Image (cartoon, rainbow, N blue to C red; front, side):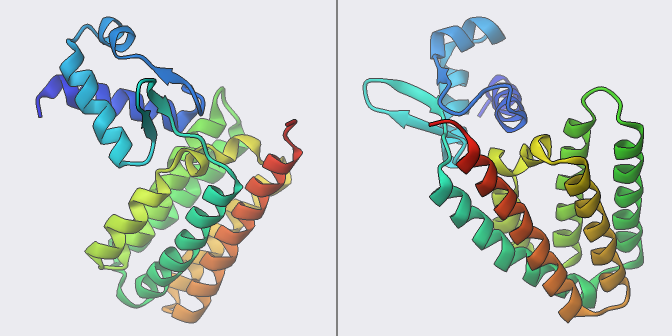
Length: 217
């Protein structure tokens, strides 16, 4: 697959995960071709890859649309993440290397600084740092298969965009839980790391569900 398709794929993926392209948005090949200055073939290939990622759905005779998520989708993704990433945290407590632990602590520092300074679009930055933090723990698990499966789930737009809706208290609580996770991994306490990660993700799921239930029908 050529470079233009890769660039279109990365750009569309970023816009979907950041919320710039809303769930249900129609992705018209001709419009995207003109927007990115490429032929329809790279756009079609990029949309196919996004479909494989679960970010885009293709409907016969209608075209491609940004995937929509209902409560059942949210429950499934977060339930699987809670199982996989809790296991990953437990493995990280047993297998992490010093430089990986240092990276987790650094990301916690960056998130605290970001939340404290609250610059423009700070929630977008927090979401990206949070994503990197979860990937760092998966990487420290030293399980490539687990990393690949869980990392793909962690890129779902409903996950990436969740920080946009947290209250100040919920933001602070989430960042404190990150510190607790790092402390458990540092102490090689796999049971605590597993429990903290599972509780952390289930709390995030409850927040997502409460937001969806409060949305007007």
